[in-house]
Length: 223
Length: 368
Ligand code: SF4
Ligand code: SF4
Image 1 (cartoon, chains in turn brown, green):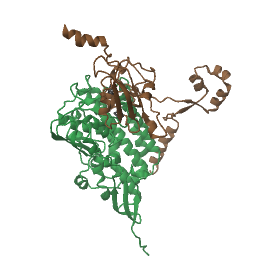
Image 2 (cartoon, protein in one colour; image 1 turned 90 degrees about the horizontal axis):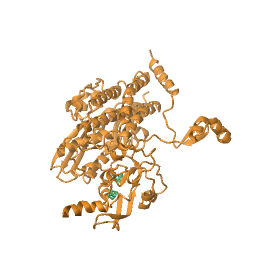
Image 3 (spheres, chains in turn purple, blue; image 1 turned 90 degrees about the vertical axis):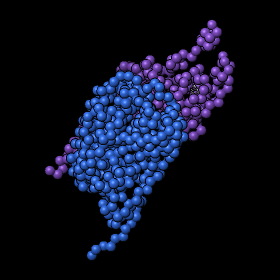
Image 4 (cartoon, chains in turn purple, red; image 1 turned 45 degrees about the vertical axis):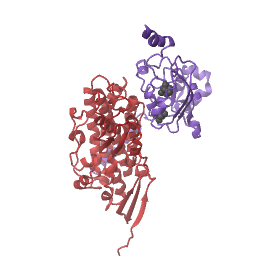
């Protein structure tokens, strides 16, 4: 009979109207009184007594709290995490970036034990306006100094502001993504929950000290 | 008294919601009937094939994501097969299984988008599209677990994939596989029996099978004409020889047949993924000895896969250096689109957009 299919279709739509919403509100999530009290870590009654204005707002359904998006620890964010202590200035990342948008200027460092071993990085510009977050630079970094970040809120008003400079890299919160870093994943690190990661945590191996280097390369050979 | 009409030429696009990207269709109408149609494309040309000549093989993976951006995984897969053939790399078994899982998930996601926009073109504004996006979102979440990105995945590497799936991927995949058949049932209830859809799509946009073969069309379009041609069966690449699945066929070669073939292929993909999950074996996901800079011997290869839209082929010529000398992509969207004029002429305006939507093209792949 004509029309049965259409009615069936309407029943599907009607069923979906009473289901819980699938959409996630971002950047702010609307909450009720219970949700707001829970977000501030208080019992709803105590909360209503302490902050009556906010409680009334929440009860009316107009209160909002910042929402956190569910995000996997491998998420390739745009903010890079760079560890000055690990970086030797080898510039593999700059060489193998498919777009060639990393610019590195180095200078022989005072902390080196042999000539050409470690360099101080003076310029480390990543042109985020052109970066496609592919992560090849992270993949090729032999010293685990560069990691993908976990943030993504990097909208800016002008192109020059999209450039990540070395100062910004030094200042940026160290929440590396576990993309291409199985050692971080093995430790159960999650950039959202575990907080910032120290440079000692992120490496596959520790950087050898000058003494260890001397033992391996000088003492053992001249023995 | 008959009314004399005059043909009028109308430009549809390049910026038109029904053209699936930047695509221009110059159509000549006589009254309501299409008398001529000329596709104009190239607005999204980025020179990917030329760019490949100065990128190493791994670097090009990132660019292959951007060709058919609703099916990045299969793009990666085709390119990896070509590189492995060229350089003589034997992939790791676990990597291959993971690649198959990813590719079949991508096929579901791509068909979902294809169906959603096809119905959008039909005038079912919003509802079906939002429904398919809901499921696609879950697939993209799975991709985020695998490789940290949702659209531009860059997941595969010569010899396998770059990293093993995380622990929480497997339960999430299981729940998705359990839910997906119900979702497909829901579309069938919503759409397949709907009289308006049937009237609008049955019998419109018919193309004879010979025309399809002569134009070397592939993929669901060909199978909707009753031609049993699926590269996963006819030329089993990866481990497709070890999984069992049916190739859905339809006979009518009209818009409805193309829609129904896609719906059934999604069910088959779910079956394939289940078998992959059963057969996957532990081990490394890529051989240790494959270097980052691959230097294949001089020569040329052609490798093809059954992408969601048709046969996706890569022709690579190597001159022994770290970058390909030439990289030619056989893009299914582009070749399926060449038949557009034959499909449109003689039909009404209202059928034009539906027929165009049923090809399921992606402009990123057409123009490359
Ligand atoms: S993520 Fe990719 S594009 Fe961005 S800097 Fe690294 S290698 Fe270059
Ligand atoms: S970040 Fe890594 S690849 Fe780049 S210069 Fe430093 S050590 Fe080398």
